[in-house]
Length: 502
Image 1: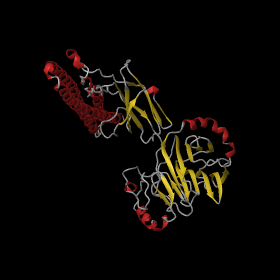
Image 2: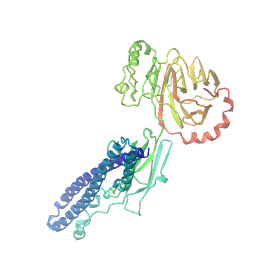
Image 3: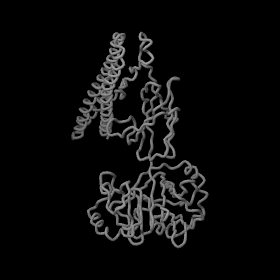
Image 4: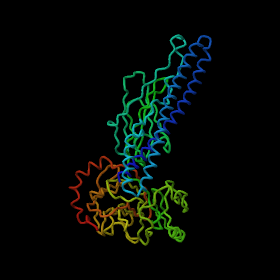
């Protein structure tokens, strides 16, 4: 076990070093490219000043080349050290892996001690995984519009120092991120800041490869900025900022990674009722859906395919390419369960909730005659309707013949004396055994179930003559978290519906 831990540590370290090597290579290319760009701009500036600036030009070109050579030398040395460390680490990893096949206990113990000693002295663990120099050459840029009158005192433009992002002052809440930073020293020449961000599923330092592009927010006048209305569909977000004066932008701050986890799920069209047209986050009643599609869908189910829905809404009955793609999302949690049928016009989410607190929102179409929103165990039968079994909890809205709004569980109904909101927020505290429904706009509590979930639950939806759209990738709103503290005293009237189910 100890040897396996060592192997795992070595493998992780190799991955870190490889990522750092990619960063060094990119930085090295940036030094070359930026140096070339700076030299070109410098030549253009000097074209009009050759008569008196030949000597100065030569001096400044030398400065740039020396800076390029210095940075290139530093990076080349660091790159060589990393390559050597990676090579040695890979040899050690290979030796450690071979050692697992040693059958003789004494030989195995001896090899393990050797590996442990070598790991202790391995250079891979003494490397600094931060470039000694950056690829920026902005401190060597020039603009001679004012200096033409002072040719003998020419110098490179002052460049703003890199700001410092303060993680303690950064805030992630309500699907918004507030980023705060400061300058290492006062600079009254700063005109504005540029904030860049991107989503990622990797913690720690940003990676060079397999990452999304940076999004840019320019012309920020203060030292704080809030990104709001975000969908948290990645585990983390990277942030960096740079200061700009009237002439040039400074270097980037050290990047900061903030956690942005939230529940993301789609509707599972592989087991939804045939009279429901299901897209990624949209379900609509389709009275003709079960006639021409049943044999076609059964054939696909027999092959064990799991359909993955698309964000784009299609008006025809033909699945989009993404809906039939297996590689774009993980397989549905429920596997190849039976399709809902009869009067159970039901569709479930494709991601099970097994722990933690989660939140999502549902909006019904204006002409929707009947719908339910809630959660259910994955054992919900294909004929079962939400709220009519002891394995499902929901609130139900009926706008057909008579208007009713009620909470339902285990075939028991509790009428709700509140107005049906435009959008419903669903809060599920799996560990605390609580399912609450809110007006998504005002955060008014509509109803709350208190139970004990004995197995994972899936978001559940029922639609008849209308449609529902949902919003996922949402954090639990701060207002909802606050209401949870007082909600326990408000659920006594619902005791007839709050059963501990097996």
